[in-house]
Amino acid sequence: MTDMDPHLRSITPTDTANTRLPMWTTRLAAAARILLVAIASVVISGSLYLLAYMVMNPEGAEEWTVGRRPNQYYTAIDHDALTFSTAAYGTIFGVAHNSGGSIEATLEALINGADVIEIDVVELDGALYSAHTPPLPFLGQRWFRGPRLDRVWAASVGAHAVMLDLKDSSSHFVRLVGDFLESRPSTRQVIVSSRSPWVLQLLRVRAPEAILLLSVPHDAALRAMQNNEPLLETIDGITVRHTALDADHAAWLSDQGLLVFAWTVEDLERVNELMRLGVDGITSDNLAIVSLFAGETGSERALRRTPVPEGLDE
Image 1 (cartoon, rainbow, N blue to C red):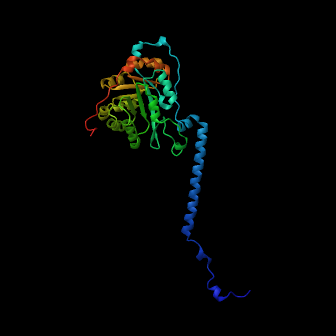
Image 2 (spheres, one colour; image 1 turned 90 degrees about the vertical axis):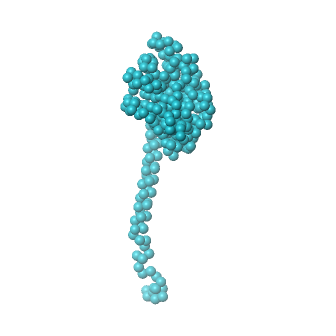
Protein backbone atom coordinates (compact mmCIF):
# COMPACT_ATOMS: atom_id res chain seq x y z
CA MET A 1 0.00 0.00 0.00
CA THR A 2 1.38 3.38 -1.00
CA ASP A 3 1.76 6.19 1.44
CA MET A 4 -1.12 8.68 1.68
CA ASP A 5 -0.67 11.84 -0.27
CA PRO A 6 0.81 14.46 2.07
CA HIS A 7 -1.82 17.01 1.02
CA LEU A 8 -4.65 14.60 1.92
CA ARG A 9 -2.95 13.69 5.19
CA SER A 10 -3.08 17.32 6.23
CA ILE A 11 -6.88 17.45 6.02
CA THR A 12 -7.67 13.93 7.35
CA PRO A 13 -8.43 13.68 11.09
CA THR A 14 -5.69 11.75 12.78
CA ASP A 15 -7.15 12.02 16.33
CA THR A 16 -10.75 10.69 16.46
CA ALA A 17 -11.04 11.86 20.08
CA ASN A 18 -11.19 15.44 18.84
CA THR A 19 -14.55 14.72 17.12
CA ARG A 20 -16.29 13.40 20.27
CA LEU A 21 -18.71 15.46 22.36
CA PRO A 22 -17.45 16.68 25.72
CA MET A 23 -17.94 14.12 28.50
CA TRP A 24 -20.36 16.34 30.47
CA THR A 25 -22.59 16.66 27.41
CA THR A 26 -22.71 12.89 26.99
CA ARG A 27 -23.60 12.42 30.63
CA LEU A 28 -26.29 15.08 30.44
CA ALA A 29 -27.88 13.39 27.44
CA ALA A 30 -27.83 10.04 29.25
CA ALA A 31 -29.40 11.58 32.34
CA ALA A 32 -32.12 13.17 30.20
CA ARG A 33 -32.91 9.81 28.62
CA ILE A 34 -33.15 8.19 32.05
CA LEU A 35 -35.42 11.00 33.28
CA LEU A 36 -37.72 10.64 30.29
CA VAL A 37 -37.93 6.90 30.80
CA ALA A 38 -38.70 7.43 34.50
CA ILE A 39 -41.44 9.97 33.74
CA ALA A 40 -42.98 7.70 31.14
CA SER A 41 -42.90 4.81 33.59
CA VAL A 42 -44.62 6.86 36.27
CA VAL A 43 -47.29 8.08 33.87
CA ILE A 44 -47.96 4.61 32.50
CA SER A 45 -47.94 2.91 35.88
CA GLY A 46 -50.10 5.68 37.38
CA SER A 47 -52.61 5.39 34.55
CA LEU A 48 -52.74 1.62 34.95
CA TYR A 49 -53.17 1.99 38.72
CA LEU A 50 -55.96 4.54 38.27
CA LEU A 51 -57.68 2.32 35.72
CA ALA A 52 -57.42 -0.69 38.03
CA TYR A 53 -58.74 1.37 40.97
CA MET A 54 -61.70 2.59 38.97
CA VAL A 55 -62.49 -0.95 37.81
CA MET A 56 -62.19 -2.38 41.33
CA ASN A 57 -63.95 0.54 43.02
CA PRO A 58 -66.94 1.57 40.90
CA GLU A 59 -68.32 3.92 43.58
CA GLY A 60 -65.07 5.88 43.70
CA ALA A 61 -64.91 5.97 39.92
CA GLU A 62 -68.47 7.24 39.75
CA GLU A 63 -67.83 9.96 42.31
CA TRP A 64 -64.80 11.27 40.41
CA THR A 65 -66.38 11.15 36.99
CA VAL A 66 -70.15 11.69 37.11
CA GLY A 67 -70.48 12.85 40.71
CA ARG A 68 -71.69 10.79 43.63
CA ARG A 69 -75.26 9.68 43.09
CA PRO A 70 -77.59 10.69 45.91
CA ASN A 71 -78.25 7.89 48.41
CA GLN A 72 -81.95 8.68 48.51
CA TYR A 73 -84.36 5.93 49.41
CA TYR A 74 -87.85 5.61 50.81
CA THR A 75 -88.45 3.35 53.78
CA ALA A 76 -91.77 3.84 55.47
CA ILE A 77 -91.59 4.91 59.10
CA ASP A 78 -93.49 3.37 61.99
CA HIS A 79 -96.19 5.88 62.82
CA ASP A 80 -96.65 4.27 66.21
CA ALA A 81 -93.13 5.51 67.02
CA LEU A 82 -94.05 9.13 66.40
CA THR A 83 -93.90 11.04 69.68
CA PHE A 84 -94.90 14.49 68.42
CA SER A 85 -97.88 15.86 66.60
CA THR A 86 -97.90 16.42 62.86
CA ALA A 87 -97.76 20.16 63.49
CA ALA A 88 -94.68 19.75 65.70
CA TYR A 89 -92.81 17.77 63.05
CA GLY A 90 -93.82 20.48 60.59
CA THR A 91 -91.75 23.03 62.52
CA ILE A 92 -88.53 21.24 61.49
CA PHE A 93 -86.88 21.96 58.15
CA GLY A 94 -86.46 18.69 56.27
CA VAL A 95 -83.24 18.65 54.23
CA ALA A 96 -82.95 16.04 51.49
CA HIS A 97 -79.31 14.95 51.70
CA ASN A 98 -77.29 15.64 48.53
CA SER A 99 -80.53 15.86 46.60
CA GLY A 100 -78.87 18.28 44.21
CA GLY A 101 -76.56 15.53 42.98
CA SER A 102 -78.85 14.97 40.01
CA ILE A 103 -81.90 16.64 38.52
CA GLU A 104 -83.90 13.45 39.05
CA ALA A 105 -82.99 13.35 42.75
CA THR A 106 -83.96 17.01 43.13
CA LEU A 107 -87.39 16.41 41.64
CA GLU A 108 -87.89 13.24 43.69
CA ALA A 109 -87.08 15.14 46.89
CA LEU A 110 -89.53 17.90 46.00
CA ILE A 111 -92.26 15.36 45.27
CA ASN A 112 -91.74 14.01 48.80
CA GLY A 113 -92.08 17.43 50.38
CA ALA A 114 -88.46 18.36 51.06
CA ASP A 115 -88.17 21.85 52.54
CA VAL A 116 -84.50 22.20 51.60
CA ILE A 117 -82.57 20.87 48.61
CA GLU A 118 -78.93 20.31 49.54
CA ILE A 119 -76.39 20.85 46.75
CA ASP A 120 -72.72 19.95 47.16
CA VAL A 121 -70.77 22.51 45.14
CA VAL A 122 -67.41 22.13 43.34
CA GLU A 123 -65.66 23.99 40.52
CA LEU A 124 -64.46 22.75 37.15
CA ASP A 125 -62.93 24.98 34.48
CA GLY A 126 -64.37 28.14 35.97
CA ALA A 127 -67.91 26.79 36.31
CA LEU A 128 -69.79 25.54 39.38
CA TYR A 129 -71.14 22.01 39.46
CA SER A 130 -72.96 19.77 41.89
CA ALA A 131 -70.65 17.03 43.19
CA HIS A 132 -69.50 15.77 46.57
CA THR A 133 -65.86 15.50 45.47
CA PRO A 134 -63.99 17.77 43.03
CA PRO A 135 -63.26 16.06 39.69
CA LEU A 136 -59.89 14.43 39.20
CA PRO A 137 -57.21 16.77 37.82
CA PHE A 138 -56.62 16.45 34.06
CA LEU A 139 -59.27 13.71 33.73
CA GLY A 140 -62.13 15.80 35.04
CA GLN A 141 -62.59 17.78 31.84
CA ARG A 142 -63.08 14.62 29.83
CA TRP A 143 -65.01 12.36 32.19
CA PHE A 144 -66.88 14.48 34.72
CA ARG A 145 -70.63 14.57 34.10
CA GLY A 146 -72.06 16.17 37.26
CA PRO A 147 -74.95 18.64 36.75
CA ARG A 148 -74.15 22.34 36.61
CA LEU A 149 -75.20 24.35 39.63
CA ASP A 150 -77.42 26.66 37.61
CA ARG A 151 -79.45 23.68 36.33
CA VAL A 152 -80.00 22.27 39.81
CA TRP A 153 -80.80 25.77 41.05
CA ALA A 154 -83.55 26.04 38.44
CA ALA A 155 -84.88 22.55 39.17
CA SER A 156 -85.12 23.25 42.91
CA VAL A 157 -87.23 26.37 42.57
CA GLY A 158 -90.15 24.68 44.35
CA ALA A 159 -88.19 24.19 47.59
CA HIS A 160 -88.52 26.48 50.60
CA ALA A 161 -84.73 26.91 50.55
CA VAL A 162 -81.63 25.66 48.80
CA MET A 163 -78.50 24.76 50.76
CA LEU A 164 -75.12 25.09 49.04
CA ASP A 165 -72.57 22.88 50.79
CA LEU A 166 -69.21 24.24 49.59
CA LYS A 167 -66.56 21.58 49.00
CA ASP A 168 -63.72 23.98 48.21
CA SER A 169 -62.21 26.94 50.03
CA SER A 170 -59.89 28.52 47.47
CA SER A 171 -60.25 32.24 46.83
CA HIS A 172 -61.06 31.56 43.17
CA PHE A 173 -63.86 29.17 44.15
CA VAL A 174 -65.31 31.59 46.71
CA ARG A 175 -65.35 34.38 44.12
CA LEU A 176 -67.29 32.12 41.76
CA VAL A 177 -69.83 31.34 44.46
CA GLY A 178 -70.16 35.03 45.31
CA ASP A 179 -70.63 35.92 41.65
CA PHE A 180 -73.24 33.18 41.27
CA LEU A 181 -75.28 34.36 44.26
CA GLU A 182 -75.05 38.03 43.27
CA SER A 183 -76.39 37.21 39.82
CA ARG A 184 -79.49 35.50 41.22
CA PRO A 185 -82.61 37.27 42.51
CA SER A 186 -82.80 37.60 46.30
CA THR A 187 -86.34 36.23 46.44
CA ARG A 188 -85.14 32.70 47.22
CA GLN A 189 -83.95 31.61 50.64
CA VAL A 190 -80.33 30.49 50.33
CA ILE A 191 -78.32 28.61 52.94
CA VAL A 192 -74.55 28.33 52.51
CA SER A 193 -72.46 25.91 54.58
CA SER A 194 -68.70 25.53 54.77
CA ARG A 195 -66.10 24.17 57.17
CA SER A 196 -63.95 27.22 56.56
CA PRO A 197 -64.68 30.27 58.77
CA TRP A 198 -62.91 32.67 56.40
CA VAL A 199 -65.09 31.50 53.50
CA LEU A 200 -68.20 32.37 55.50
CA GLN A 201 -66.73 35.74 56.45
CA LEU A 202 -66.14 36.59 52.79
CA LEU A 203 -69.60 35.45 51.75
CA ARG A 204 -71.19 37.48 54.52
CA VAL A 205 -70.20 40.52 52.44
CA ARG A 206 -70.81 39.01 48.98
CA ALA A 207 -74.15 37.39 49.90
CA PRO A 208 -75.58 39.34 52.86
CA GLU A 209 -79.04 37.79 52.50
CA ALA A 210 -77.78 34.20 52.72
CA ILE A 211 -78.00 32.09 55.86
CA LEU A 212 -74.43 31.08 56.71
CA LEU A 213 -73.83 27.81 58.56
CA LEU A 214 -70.51 26.48 59.80
CA SER A 215 -70.19 22.80 58.94
CA VAL A 216 -69.15 20.95 62.12
CA PRO A 217 -68.01 17.34 61.62
CA HIS A 218 -67.23 16.33 65.21
CA ASP A 219 -67.33 17.28 68.87
CA ALA A 220 -63.84 18.84 68.88
CA ALA A 221 -64.81 21.31 66.15
CA LEU A 222 -68.01 22.11 68.00
CA ARG A 223 -66.09 22.92 71.19
CA ALA A 224 -63.48 24.95 69.31
CA MET A 225 -66.04 27.31 67.79
CA GLN A 226 -67.36 28.25 71.23
CA ASN A 227 -64.31 30.43 71.88
CA ASN A 228 -64.19 32.01 68.43
CA GLU A 229 -65.99 35.32 68.89
CA PRO A 230 -65.39 36.68 65.35
CA LEU A 231 -66.83 33.47 63.93
CA LEU A 232 -69.88 33.62 66.18
CA GLU A 233 -70.51 37.17 65.02
CA THR A 234 -70.44 36.06 61.40
CA ILE A 235 -72.47 32.86 61.22
CA ASP A 236 -76.20 32.28 61.61
CA GLY A 237 -75.80 28.74 62.87
CA ILE A 238 -74.21 25.37 62.28
CA THR A 239 -74.84 22.20 60.37
CA VAL A 240 -73.49 19.43 62.58
CA ARG A 241 -73.01 15.68 62.48
CA HIS A 242 -75.85 14.52 64.67
CA THR A 243 -73.64 12.25 66.81
CA ALA A 244 -71.69 15.33 68.01
CA LEU A 245 -74.79 17.04 69.34
CA ASP A 246 -75.86 16.47 72.94
CA ALA A 247 -78.00 18.34 75.47
CA ASP A 248 -75.16 20.58 76.72
CA HIS A 249 -74.10 21.65 73.22
CA ALA A 250 -77.72 22.17 72.19
CA ALA A 251 -78.36 24.39 75.22
CA TRP A 252 -75.29 26.52 74.48
CA LEU A 253 -76.22 26.90 70.81
CA SER A 254 -79.74 27.94 71.82
CA ASP A 255 -78.34 30.54 74.21
CA GLN A 256 -76.29 31.94 71.33
CA GLY A 257 -79.38 32.18 69.13
CA LEU A 258 -77.80 29.95 66.48
CA LEU A 259 -79.65 27.77 64.00
CA VAL A 260 -78.87 24.06 64.27
CA PHE A 261 -79.16 21.62 61.36
CA ALA A 262 -78.24 17.99 62.14
CA TRP A 263 -76.99 15.45 59.59
CA THR A 264 -77.38 12.70 58.42
CA VAL A 265 -80.22 11.09 60.38
CA GLU A 266 -81.88 7.87 59.23
CA ASP A 267 -83.44 6.69 62.49
CA LEU A 268 -86.80 7.94 63.72
CA GLU A 269 -85.80 7.52 67.37
CA ARG A 270 -82.85 9.85 66.83
CA VAL A 271 -85.14 12.28 65.00
CA ASN A 272 -87.31 12.47 68.12
CA GLU A 273 -84.24 12.96 70.34
CA LEU A 274 -82.98 15.81 68.16
CA MET A 275 -86.38 17.49 68.22
CA ARG A 276 -86.27 17.42 72.02
CA LEU A 277 -82.87 19.12 71.78
CA GLY A 278 -84.50 21.90 69.78
CA VAL A 279 -82.82 21.54 66.37
CA ASP A 280 -84.14 23.63 63.48
CA GLY A 281 -83.45 21.22 60.63
CA ILE A 282 -82.68 17.56 60.04
CA THR A 283 -80.93 16.09 57.00
CA SER A 284 -81.78 12.58 55.86
CA ASP A 285 -81.41 10.22 52.91
CA ASN A 286 -84.75 8.61 53.77
CA LEU A 287 -87.42 10.54 51.92
CA ALA A 288 -90.02 9.17 54.32
CA ILE A 289 -88.30 11.08 57.14
CA VAL A 290 -87.91 14.15 54.97
CA SER A 291 -91.62 14.08 54.11
CA LEU A 292 -92.44 13.85 57.83
CA PHE A 293 -91.29 17.46 58.20
CA ALA A 294 -93.35 18.77 55.30
CA GLY A 295 -96.14 21.04 56.40
CA GLU A 296 -97.48 24.55 56.25
CA THR A 297 -95.88 25.54 59.53
CA GLY A 298 -92.41 24.45 58.45
CA SER A 299 -92.65 25.91 54.97
CA GLU A 300 -93.83 29.29 56.26
CA ARG A 301 -91.10 29.74 58.87
CA ALA A 302 -88.47 32.34 58.14
CA LEU A 303 -84.86 31.51 58.87
CA ARG A 304 -82.98 34.03 60.93
CA ARG A 305 -80.13 36.03 59.48
CA THR A 306 -77.21 37.64 61.31
CA PRO A 307 -76.57 41.31 60.38
CA VAL A 308 -73.23 42.05 58.72
CA PRO A 309 -70.73 42.82 61.52
CA GLU A 310 -69.26 46.33 61.51
CA GLY A 311 -66.10 46.55 59.43
CA LEU A 312 -66.81 43.54 57.20
CA ASP A 313 -68.87 45.55 54.75
CA GLU A 314 -66.20 48.16 54.18
